[in-house]
Amino acid sequence: MPPKADINKAGWEQSDFPILCETCLGDNAFVRMSKQEYGRSCGTCARPFTVFRWNPGTGMRYKTTVICQTCAKIKNVCQTCLLDLEYGLPTQVRDTALAVENDAPTSEINREYYAQNMESRLEGSKSLLDSNRASSAGKEMLKQLARTDPYYKRNLNNELSKQNIPDRYHGRNDPVAHKIMSTHASTLGLAPPEDKSITSLFLSSLPSMATEDSIRTRVVQSLPSVPPSQIKSIVHVAKSRCAFVNFKDRETAETAAHAWANGFEIGEETATVKWGRSKGGSNGKPKPVASSSEFAVSYAL
Image 1 (spheres, helix red, strand yellow):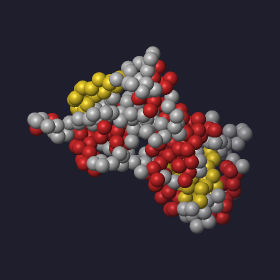
Image 2 (cartoon, rainbow, N blue to C red):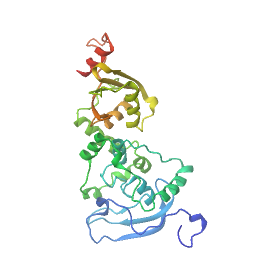
Image 3 (spheres, rainbow, N blue to C red):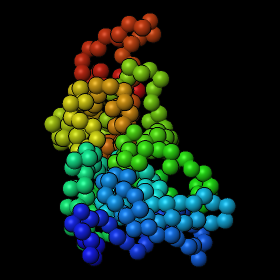
Image 4 (cartoon, helix red, strand yellow):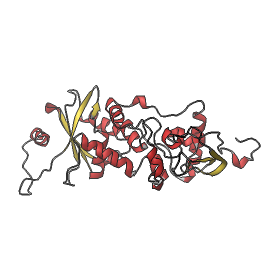
């Protein structure tokens, strides 16, 4: 609690220097910052915090911190652009790759209480995020997408500041993240088919010991942002070591495709992922299916 502060300031944040990515800090070694204690409310938890403002370089626009340090540490993000400090990516991209569930409350009633509780857990730690527990496919995805070098030209425009701060922070409905993941999935052969009725993903080279239950469990674990109720069905063909994951809508199927772009990891193996095919024939009528095995193989071709 700030010294000599009244009880209403309990939990308000004071700091001497912001948590920033190299890009937002700028390439000026002698950058000067203005500091205003309790200058604004945090864009996520709504608690007053110390606001910093500075110019990152000649011809650049002035920048300011928009979230408090506690919230920045919880997500391991920059206080200004809200991008991940390790990978330089939107939180939605990082959390999708790491299969991290966002458990932070978004309601005004609980978010300040949550931030205060997390602050005590953060004592002596830079962040609570543990990227080491990610699957090998998730780590490979982050390795391929990571932006490790500063990109100072970003300081010339204001694209990120036009986005919704809570959505960017919590990793939901982020158009920048969606574009990054869509491009990545397409590059790896998972471009969404034009037929919007296709809401299935085909998994091949599954472990021989895989079962429908084990596949379902792994699907739910790898898609923490997707409610289990959005999984319509799972058709497992043990003999062919393949399965279909059928979702209730196209949006959910695309979310899964983004998450599994580098493969679907189950057990000690990584299954190959492809979009399902339309069940309609050339005349628009459904093709007859003789058996579940034939059904699965026909989709894999």
